[in-house]
Image (cartoon, rainbow over all chains, first blue to last red):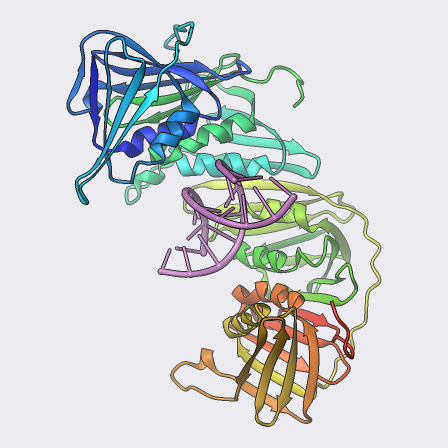
Length: 260
Length: 260
DNA sequence: TGGTCTTCAA
DNA sequence: TTGAAGACCA
């Protein structure tokens, strides 16, 4: 059986909000190390990988491996019931046909309890190789979102050029062209604004902005985002959650002169 | 060639926001004295006239007269990329087919650059006669906006009566009538709240509130607004920008018992 | 497609 | 804290 208590129901809420447009149904794979989720979007261009480590919960108990097949849109509705500071406890029996969610708000002695029907989902579990990326850019997640939405005004795709000079996001469209260039910089006073670029080799790749903008819904989860690039390899966009938990998005580059 | 550096990208952003609902495409007429814009709204009821003097920029350079034909909705999208404290440099070659906009944020080493395609716009340039108005009312721009939006709740037109007693805004509609009367007054402590009415002759005119509310989008550009009235002549609503630069709106009065 | 709601920037 | 803009739902 699974029993996991999350101090901030908010975290799960934001995670689900950030991925529900990419994935309709998916398994939450629970074992003694934590709760993992991996799913491709419908068009098989993007992949979501979440890991909530056992340490993110207190307490956390999972006797044996369980795959909880959940419809994310249903889960969203249930999570909407969570107040901002609610404590969430999720429970499931080993052969459960439902996921039990309990929201507690110590403040006003309110307990909400939901049972969410589970479903069987066949899911190929993809081994994602740990890649050494040619370029790793760490930046404020709000800035990444800003850049993506700004360039969305020009085109539906963006080219990322990482070089020793910095990282350049550029888009060309009907009304004109646009680009945003960031350089590494460290601000002692406001470390949350830091931009850090690590580069072993210049990279130039083009991606669908629609997906990137979608990934940016996760911005609320972390003040920083890590963008990792290698030529001809899917982009990785990573948001760190508490501890070593994370939410990762992978996106295959657009190839050649491909349009749309 | 034109090259103009504006310390506050914000100013252009607000100007364009304030007029983009009235005018879709228009020319920015550049010469050595500054950048001017003049355009009628689609229904030819309102006229916008902007003048950004060369002194508002530093540096400012314009070798010869250029008319830059811009789609304001595209320009809005580009200006949305401007952070609040960004410095904006606009550039255009003499026979340019694109306007180049560069936003710099010294703080976080971010440079955004956009090329906006230009268009040819045939524009009758209207000589606007410098009129002596029968009544000139200067008031806080926020108060003018408040009055217009408040009266909007009653009707879609408003009658302005300027007399030696003050200025009265009144609206009559299905649910009832409303009016707001302002008198001249000077507040030493808070000069930004001053209301000043200069009058040579009583005036009574009726205008479309929809347009007035639209003009009020410019409120953010200046704490004061000047409203100038003469019988049977378009109303002038003027916002002063830095120095002698300005944004002016003209609106023809409604005649007789005209509805709509 | 409109209205409402949340979210984001100032 | 407020207003505007985007997202969501009906």
